[in-house]
Image (cartoon, rainbow, N blue to C red; front, side, top):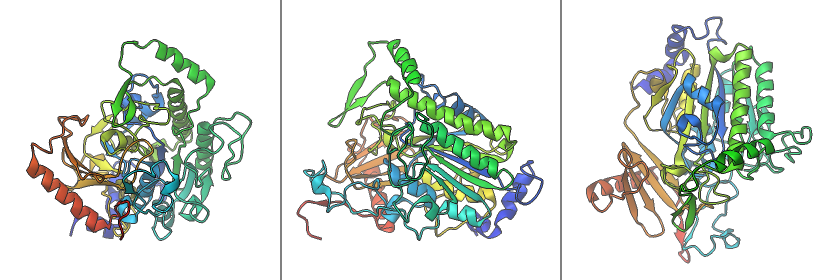
Length: 488
């Protein structure tokens, strides 16, 4: 019997004993279960926090979270754009397995004629435009296990009938079909799922306040609060005081520093100096601080797991090019590291040693089994089939089973990326581009910036990883783009 099978049958017993033995909730059955605050930021790049190397953006509250928990340096989103990654978090499945491979609202093969990609050589693969209701979401699993469930912020996983309240969340504050805030970042919000606040109220702080209100109301019950920021997605809007602060800071940077490079046909930002974006990052960080401070004030911090993640890489090649992901290559919409590697932190009081760093490659499908195990709830192996529990890493008890990580993005990204797929196997990463069939091979340990393509010099390794990627695509039923004029 595998460890996963054993824990799936044992339910809360094994993990509950481990947690109780370390002082984690000794009062009663409900309090032995940790609360969860899951924080997802939209479009935040790997280097956009001080704890991950930014010297321009100021993020003291996120840095505090890193200091109090475990920082993951090889954490990945399941897709370089938002909706597919968000679906992977809630289902524990790769987007390719569910055919939820592009942001919901992107062109389908039949509608691409009115899109800017209409003259591209490939038609995008057809994709499912909502999180299927037959999937048992993480929220539904936790709710069935006795948790109160709450969602605030960006949803972008389907329209009417597929909203958060249809997928296991008891409360929904702001989640609907749109991927960006319809009225911008200041009230009036024009959001059908969020009442307007006083004129000029700032959206990140409002979402944090709604989250705190829910936590206060359910402080005596186990809860799952999912704070899914619209920040730092476009439109690029910041408080004027923060914009002025960072404009002054940007003016003090060395003017000789190179600011622009090229990624394919796109310009890519090479330095973090965008004042508006910096203000958006700081406002998001302050909202995180609001929630963390509330957990302290309510006496809940010691029994609450806080998870922090971004849904795709930082926006660096289009739409204002607001951030730089260096030393990573490219950004949102690309399968290079800048598009999929994310800042991730987990605070698990009494379990995770504060200030620790984990270099093990992990991915957004892993949250589902991890949180079930943390809660002492049985695993749902047919549901979160593409995830692995990170509990051994968090407890310092060894690594995960040997595995490869996969990406399948059969679409043209608004940011310049083209239809492609990728595999990470140990330190090796291979990307296959569907337009011309070329492959690129990188040793991420030696070349984190993916500057030296080793495919021609290592043909056996290249072929082995290509074969492995293709086998995975067949196993999950991945859909592919087609050349125009091709008849199926």
